[in-house]
Structures are given as structure tokens and as C-alpha cells.
Amino acid sequence: MSWLFLILGVFAEIIGTTSMKLSEGFTKLLPSISIFVFYGLSLSLVTLSLKKIDVSIAYAIWSGVGTATITVIGLIYFKEQLSFIKVLSILLIILGVVGLNIGGDVHGETAKKQAEMEEVKK
Figure 1 (cartoon, one colour):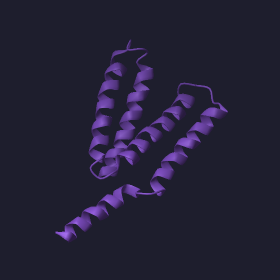
Figure 2 (cartoon, helix red, strand yellow):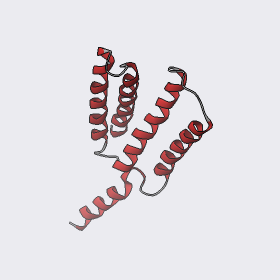
Figure 3 (cartoon, helix red, strand yellow):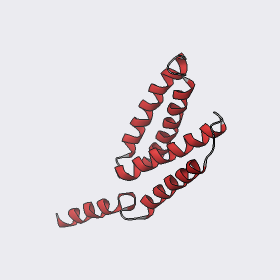
Figure 4 (spheres, helix red, strand yellow):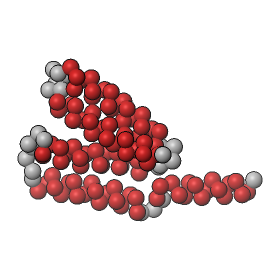
């Protein structure tokens, strides 16, 4: 369930960030309201995901996937310019998220094992 909360939190963050652009500096009412609604929802969902997911992993995924997706939305929907630096940066974000997931304490397993060991000691 925690991973579902995180995924939904990412989607809400993407909608909130897109709403920032669509609000045209808070001059359009619905997108302006959407910023606060979707960022509030996003932060709430990510907070719920932290019950089972390490904060370092959850935040890296939330911010990394959100940033990469917003970059693609900017390129396609808002017709922003593509550059070598943008492509390289997106690749580095993806590599960073993958690296955090495959290196070290994956998905809180160490904490889970420590808790199990404490239970056995009692």
C-alpha cells in the first residue's frame, strides 16, 4: 500500500506543478487552486508512504520521477527547448533513483530485520 501512496503522490505532484505553469502567475483561478490542492494531496500521500518506505528512497523517487516527468511535459506540452544538458540531467536523475533502490538498504529491509531481531531477544 505504501508504494501505491508514493505513486499517487508523484502523480499529484506532477499535476500540482503543471498547474503552476497553467495558473500564469496566479492569474487563472482553477489552476491556482489546483496548485494547493494537488501539492497538499501529494505531500499527504508521500507522508503515508513513509510508514514502510525509507524517507531517502521515497523522497528521491517523488522528486526525481516528478522532475523528469515535468521536464517531458514541458518539452511536449509547453514546447520548451530540448538541450543536451536537459537529456543528461534526466538520465542522471533516473540513474540516481535506480542506484538508491539497488544499493544498500533496499526498501527498509535492514530496519525490518533489526525489528525482528529485537522481537526475538524479548
